[in-house]
Length: 278
Image (cartoon, rainbow, N blue to C red; front, side):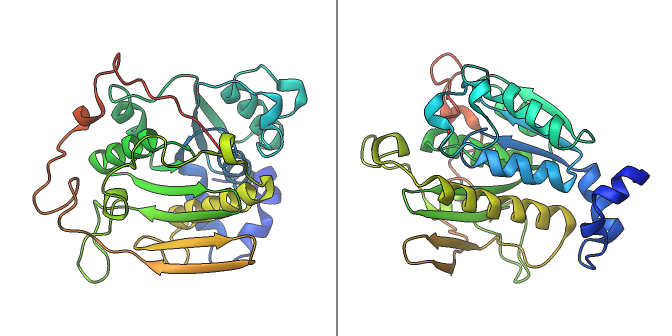
């Protein structure tokens, strides 16, 4: 049940016919894991906390640095040098004390991914490297958890929902990350934001869109973005939505899968993956 203070806090949701009391109760009961407390993770964490998501898990092994603050709005100058998960936890507590925050100041690995992801209902990936993205996607598939994915470039961004363990209205499986990107590009061929830069507000827009999709998945509001990729071009002030489909040849969820566990990501001591964030 919602307390009188919660009813007052969430009244703009409660009067929305698409959310209402039932939707707010679903948000309160939900457990969401945010991978990365950086540029994408910041608006995700802020808006999910403000919306009343009952439990937020945050995993990131990095500390706040001064050059983060141009876009990572969950942190401030006073928290430079502090673990990002701790900084984000304090921000959430100030914003909404009704939200429980579970923090993981550690690396995501093949050894711990299934255990951590399995504790949550839905996962939002805000990392910025292919190794983490493939690990999170594969782990969500095996754990049967919906993944809300986003990525950004200097002036552009991409958002979608992956739930390849489910079928769409047409009876066909939803696509996975490996349907869209079967393999990671060779190392060094795709520059990250540290090398090419990124407009801070673009990351805010894309992370906010990602938060919207998480809330939609929790409450059942509107149409799922699964099976579609939303593309944002900030320079041209343009959005485009393109269809993506299940690839029966993909190595994870295809008809003849070759990836049947997380061993492809290596042993913990060999491939500990840092959750780098944009």
